[in-house]
Image (cartoon, rainbow, N blue to C red; front, side):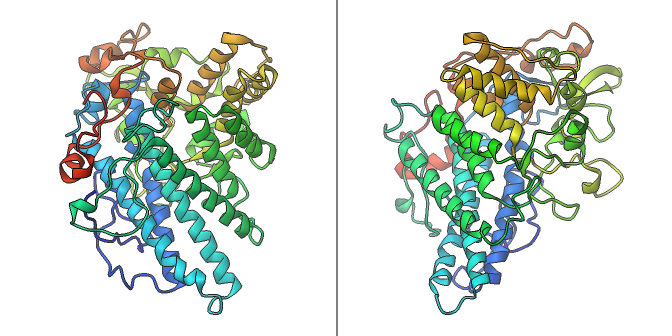
Length: 503
């Protein structure tokens, strides 16, 4: 692990460099005196939320999507994210290094806040009840951030969890739970097992859930849609997501149902669906980190939409466009027709992140939208997938409930067996398009992919980059898992020989 100065996350608005993978704010503090009061903890806690804005927007979301089968590069892309779309992923690539180091920088900051809060929490006499409640909340949130970042890394840099890999040496992540920046490479950790990595994530989420449960006994302001701060239901939503990816369908179903059955996050109605993406408001949004024109994250839409509305780095494949049927509101919400390039070729562009007008900083569009980190629609899809084999009636119910809120005039359909499984998978792709799930869904389902080079209803194929058009992965392709950065392997002697297979 590289040595990092204490990130100056006390700034209310963390400024990122032009590369949105760099989550480290500029500056450094004296790490011995930076946190001495509850108010200091608040500033650091706000800094962690600023980091979450970065982690849930921009290329932290779309990098893996560009790697999969849903988008193709145009000749205007300037090789931005080119390694991912072409499948030429290298351990020496600066993007790979940036994601890894950026995430560990956030983990470092979370570790620091967690450590420095403990003496304050232990001071029984010196805290008011209000301050104690606040610290309990901040401690819970810091543990969530650490868990979220480790899971983000786990998905990308580790193989899928299985009985064969769970306890195998060096298949997890190097785990850091204390704040101790050092130049002594002999103190850097090796990769853990997958069980050890997940044990840390699970323990952190339990602390987060318990702390927020305690806080919510006094303050329920975040138990409502579009909450800018974490709640117990956000924790449950994350646990449901993680359990599904691990193949623990029983746990995934239980947690997803807990969120659904709360009744707090009803599925967004058809007439409000487009607004959820243009104005970042929706009844089903469980957690939406705060953003303003003064406190922005990264642009997720910017890789799909140009400022002058005359080109796009990436466009959806024809297969993506064709999967939406008649009356499906998602087609109108997710796509728009632009005329691309000097030839003014009509083409569908991906318009799910069109930019929230309230987040503009000038006359030109910046394509900034607030991240909708957890939505009830994902919970319905998790519940449906988790129930396919154990309770087909329940799986059909959740599938039909979601479709009824997306397709005008929808009539329920009952599926069974493989047809039910495939219908749920298809609905998941339609709903979560461009939200960073596709690559990991394919991997979980043990499916390869092949991008369809054909665009039979337009001339857009003439402006597509050849190396991006027809990329394919077999189900066991090593590129489904990213390489450990070569910089990390060279710096950390404990990780010698622990590169992922194929790199």
